[in-house]
Length: 305
Image 1: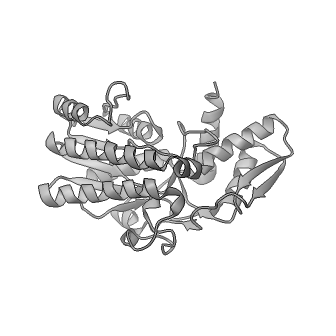
Image 2: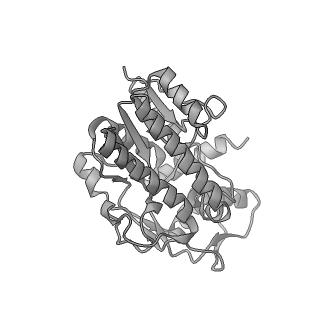
């Protein structure tokens, strides 16, 4: 049986990959930050050499929403470059058979064609509010491709759409839009607030994927795909931020008004993935947005303490 490392295995994506591997009777290694400092090249080198890993799921990253990206650009660029470079290089040196790198749809141009095909990468300017994170992820993709080209290292790259699910970050300042809205509407319901205010115009459209669907796609592609070309992973269907807020309000049970704050940034007008490549490979998601939000809200309520 393969020895598997899930880097970032305690986070939203990593923990979902661990759950998915357990379903296949695989018990991956998912060291905590105290057990393995991914910012330390020597530590990563030594750990991979000692543990004789066959497969690596690179899900470790510094992540956050518009506010966090715009406030901490140096941290997002530096930490993500260092983490992914350390793991990819050390995995190759240690003789790892295959590595899966998780990117992000923010790698695509701000005004990319919709839906966004994989080949629109590097064809236009990035969205300014998250360009630092995007640049780091683009570097990770190119590093995987470079190590495949020069060394024959079997490294593949996936581009998931906006993710959510159990274990998400619900911090109002540093989280992504869906978990932030879940918390806002939940707290507004408990406080009997007359209204909830959401950022921007409410018009931007986003695509959302339940994190366990992504984990299933990761395992599917780890077992069946080997190519330098990146692969989009999503639903291929999007919704406006206003419609998302209305759906969350309904699921949470908030009956007040939804107000807009147009002084706050909208970010990219639309982010919808062209998922025809992964569909042709034989994979598709299974958890609808309504069901996924309900599962995520149940988890949030159970873990409020």
